Structures are given as C-alpha cells and as structure tokens.
Image (cartoon, rainbow, N blue to C red; front, side, top):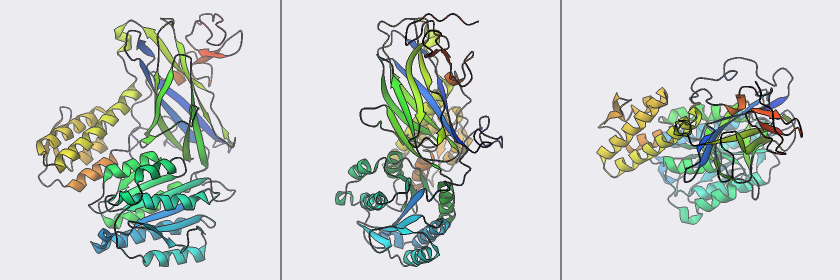
Length: 494
C-alpha cells in the first residue's frame, strides 16, 4: 500500500496515544473549506474526516479469537490452465490456514457455479488446531477444478457460515480467475445487499480472465480491498501478509455519527483511504458503522447539503457535528468535532477547495479515467484509451503519485505527465488494465491538512476548533459570535 508522506506520529516510530497506558484510543480530525457562496444553486460542504486508532498493540485481543475466517477458492474450469494457477491458489489457502491461531473458527469454500464445502465437509466452521489445520491442508490439496463461476453463491455460503459464529470480526478471502458468468444462479447484487455490514471481504484476481471492476464492486460494498497478482507464485506470500494484518485487528466495530443542524442534510459519507468503500447509515440515524480496526488511519469524505436562507453571513456557523463511538466502551474516544459553514458573497473565498478534499476528488477522477480507458481498449478504440490514460497520468502527476505513474508506464510511454502526453504501448493487454483498475482503488494519504477545522487556531486542547459557551457550556465554533445552542453572545477572543 502506498501511503505518501506520513503525518506526525504515523509510521515514523513516534510513540502514539495509548501505547504508554495500554488503552486503545481513537482520534478524529476534520479538514474542510468552510466558505460557501450564498448564491450557489445547490450549496454542498465537503469535508475529509481522518479517524485514527492507536494502542491495540498489533496483536489482536487477548480474550479469545477476534476473527472468523472463510477462504473462498475459485475451482471453476478455467483454473485448470495453466496448471500453476490452481497450485498457487492451493498454496495460498494453505499459507493462510497455517497462520490461524488455535481456536480461530475457519472454513474453506470450493467455488464454481455453486458453492460447496471443501473443509469441513459439512456446512459449519472448524476451530483451528494442529489437527484441523492439517486436515484442511489435505482437503485444499485435493481440490479439483471444474464448472462455472457464481461469486454470489460463494459469498452466500460464507455469510451463512459466519452467521453461526460469535467472533467479533468475520472475514472472507476470495480468489477468482474469471468473470461472474452464472450470476442468474444467485444474483450478486442481492447477495451483496444481504451481506453488507455482516463481514469484511478481500478479493484477489489471478490469471488473465477476471474483472477488476467486479472485484471492486464486491470489496467496496463489503469494506475490503481488491488486489491481484501478475505471477501465480506470488500469491501465497500475499495471503500470508493479508492474514498477518487481519490478526492485528482488535476493535471489531467503530461508528461515525453525523448529526446535521436544522437546514442541512447528509448527502453521503464514504471511505476514501486506504481503499474506497461504500458506507450506508443505519436506518433512521446518521450512524455509519465501519469494521475491523487495528492501529491504522482511515479517511472519509463527508458531503453535507446546506441552505443559506435565513442564515447569518460573515460568521462561522455549525453545519453538523461529527462523533466517533464504539459499542463496547473499551476505546477512549475523541470529543465531537464541528463541520462549519461561512456564507459569503466573496468569490475569492468561495472558490477555494480544501487540499484534502481536492486530493481525493482527483483520485476519484483518476479511477474513472482508468475505467474508461479499459472500456475503450476492449472495444478497439486505442486512441480513446490513450487519451484517457493521458488524463490519468495528468491527475497522478498533480497528486504527486509516483507509484501510480509507474503502474501507468506498463501500459503507456509517459512523455509528459504534467501535460498528459502518453503513447499506448503496442503490447498492452486487457489484463494489464484490470491490474491497474484494482491497484488504483488504493489511494494515498494526500497532502498535509488544509484548513484543518480540528486544529483551528484558538481552540481549546482537544476541542476541535470549538470553545465553551459561558452561559450554557455548549460547544461553539471558535470564530462564532453566538452560541448555536442558546444564542448567547460570545465575546471576541483576541
């Protein structure tokens, strides 16, 4: 994963909050540009929420297995050639099984146009031990390829297996070499709707017949990541790394709550780092649940609608309050943070965009350009594919994303990244576009914080750009002249 330049305390060896006391802590920062034009037809406020968890110790939870693991292995007919493909899938599954600590519930699903149990031989999960791991390895090495591909059936069986488990985190590691050609057997759209929020799924492509956007469709809905390997022999090591990361997760669930003020609504909240993921609020609430946290940072883009009618101009107003919570109370939580709006008629103010918001918007457009290039190449429109890849190169250059430019160079000769001048390589293949699509779903940190509401000048420590009202003690934006709760006048701070 490319993370760009780490921010203070992130990957620098600096002790983080919670490490000295042994307590798990969560942090919340908000980056936004607060100025909106009062004359805009559809005013929207965009903000980037940075959520950080520290102090898990990187060893999972000591009071029992936190993880229940399903390995879904593609055993369709296409896995028979080349022979190294099925062998690599078997070796990868075995590598994952060997990493499972004793007591971890696990199962192996054989995937074709249907889903079947490979281990155990009945629809249940085994508890990891030396004996069950050895039996599972023998079952995996005995897998035989044949049949079609219905990924919905694989996920449905995985869902049913995980539903029977008490482990806080359910995870599916899915491998496929082909497209979902038997979707009518069990439509993937409905299965994803049923599985959303129930478990996390990481999906891998192998060979040359898989569909990158199909993997992203699965992982964005199920809050995992999509990846691929160019060489079959690399897959076992990749699986080992995935399992090592999973076993460090100690916070099963963390929720982000967004409470809009009267006159504003939540348009959406989506994860934009380290991978893109869809988030849906629990019915009737502004509470968005995220799953499976270790020591890590994730970033989310929040979009709020806003209405200037009847609202004061020339001062900071609270548009929404963002909070982080966990169900078990074992995490020290940050204080709620405000999202602000400042209505203005000055275009010099309203045209500015926060650096973080701008970075992730560029990343979104880069993904669109790569997908459009893949479509054009598939239909023989090489000039259009080249144009879209030039657009992707220009965006990658603007984001200082050297890793993305290196990936693009597999498909094009980059003559001038800043201008987007590229030349499509004559040996570019369809699968090269699929590798690029999955890799492009992983974003970088982006620039340092922009306006940084969470660090506004004059804020009280930990207050997230707020001050306490002297009359009612409610929190008010640091630059507000009136308390949003009681309308008490707040004296100017010098």
